[in-house]
Length: 139
Image (cartoon, rainbow, N blue to C red; front, top):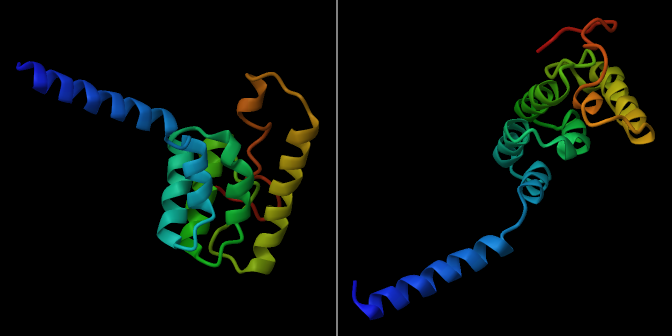
């Protein structure tokens, strides 16, 4: 390889390395997606949170349980189930008043997680499935 091509390649590699260091974190990408006005982006972010096992997205996923789009709600509960192994009896297709008790259980669970200091191993999933709650089934 000619010296000029080597120099050009090194400059290109350095630029890529610098750009990679300045790239936004995966979590910020997921957080922006979960808050997007575009339902497709919200759905993709739910899926990404589950695939990346991004437990820091749980509060935003819980917010998506009240999304105006049922497809987003479906993706949110699937991600929460993947991250926590439970549903709290949430059914994405129900109207808001029927979803409210399960959303309340999710919010209560989240508050309980914030006040406790579990070890990393025990923080991986809350106790119980929640599917046995009144009216609860798994998605």
